[in-house]
Length: 140
Image (spheres, one colour):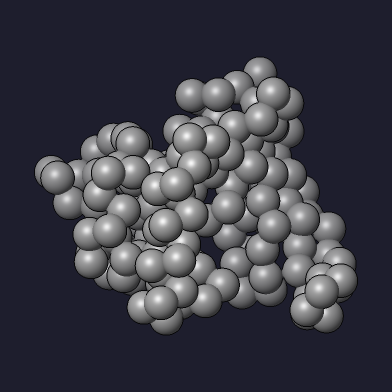
């Protein structure tokens, strides 16, 4: 298994199915909009956890000078609870040696906590919903 760039496969329906699990707007149109955002940006990276050419998980992120910012991370339903999400976080740590940050909802904050992220709850200014800032300071 490996963590590799799969940006060219982002419009693959199987990848879309995994994106839909994590995207704010998981409809077909929302997934297409999310994919278009990555396709049109050189700054946004899109990697997958791949085993035997099968994409088991995806991670969309941006690398800044001082951190890696996760915008999207998800694992195919049939591969939940097998350590793939944790493996992708570990791969990001190993590849970039920078703190990792993410913003998430109540449903996913437990995942980040299990990965060692420190979390801070807040209410989203625009939508008024509970959100969490998640920070993993890394192993530098």
